[in-house]
Image (cartoon, rainbow, N blue to C red; front, side, top):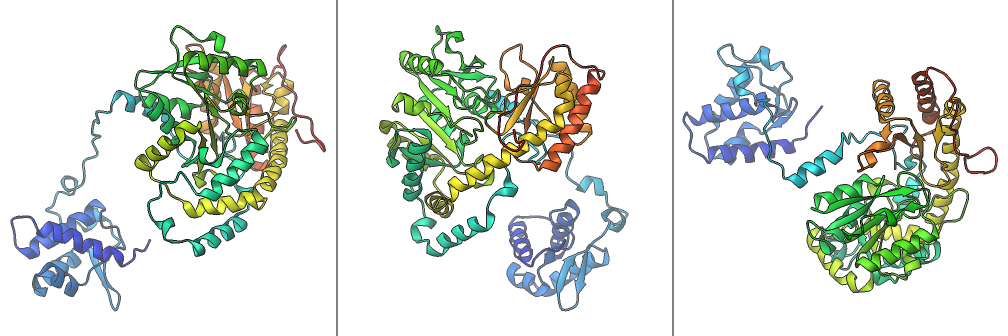
Length: 519
């Protein structure tokens, strides 16, 4: 690996700081020791460019002979090499072979002993919810869209269009709540496709849904307040609420969605989190009766509902359902959306649709806490929506995800025939494979890890003491080949776990009915 000459400037700045403090020894010895220790500790990587002796002497205010003496000693010991016409570089060497015999190398290296960090209780809760988070894309990663299908060339053209047109305001601090044309385009889209009742001045652009949750929690709840959350439910929202000091009340979910009548009304909530269009992770759609009951419950307790509409675009058998916010006429619902699922996660753009009295305060708080940014990307996204690319992309992704779900179902068919139960898959980007016990779930996860496959436990999405077991199988972000291989492995592993015997009860839920064999 090669390193640019910019490292030389950093070395000079570091040496200037070192020389600014009092220390024993000659200037030449101090220069030698500083460079030697940085090389041994890895602060100056092998191949890193060093400043010339003339530059060092001039910048540090020392004689050139002082610098040359230190450099010659480092060179003699094999730490640096001089390349004719190119300059001075850190050598590629085995430090233990090159190190002088009378020096204790181990004593010069950083200690490997871990340092105990006194995290807060909220910090410990947050870290416990993080898991490994290795960031790798694998066949069953939930929530990962088909990045390979995103129209990158078109997107780059839109970005370049606005980079060239950008005025000075794009490079400064903005406080308006987001790019105006994007808020207008979003307003038109949400009114038509999701029946959201809003105006552009109610839409606040955020850096994803997580930032939106944080803003809501900071402004509308105090530590110790209660938040009702779906059980099972989205771990990201629960982590945000818990790390803000809220007390979480798990509310059970069934085939009709959140069961508000099962919650403890003696301990009223300040916030109620729900995914009514497509419950995560169960896949249930909240019935109209439940929606009306939820709205009535929120009004009775003076609570705000956070409606997370994270992948409502992807329905395969029925048209998208109207939003809860639209049904309520706005209050007391705060609508949260994100482009991470429908476009790509790295875009880091989401939005809040707020009741009008809240917007200005949320705008100011967002500008203070997070600042606003990515205005070039926001402008490109506004054009992406207004010019029709967004709707065409969503249509393509619906077809793509139907096909990918069909591939996964086909790969799991031997297990389904033997009794493995799958969720309906009528919408969304994942299926749930229901299992008999948490022990069975964890055993499959361990075996999958050994095979290089990552499985997500359904039980991890519960707060209650008796979680249901299963696997959350994301299919949207994987190719058909990947799904076939990973699905076949899972089917074989599940059958082996059961001893290869067909189940006497239980069956897979039917896949959505579509043309040409897609689910």
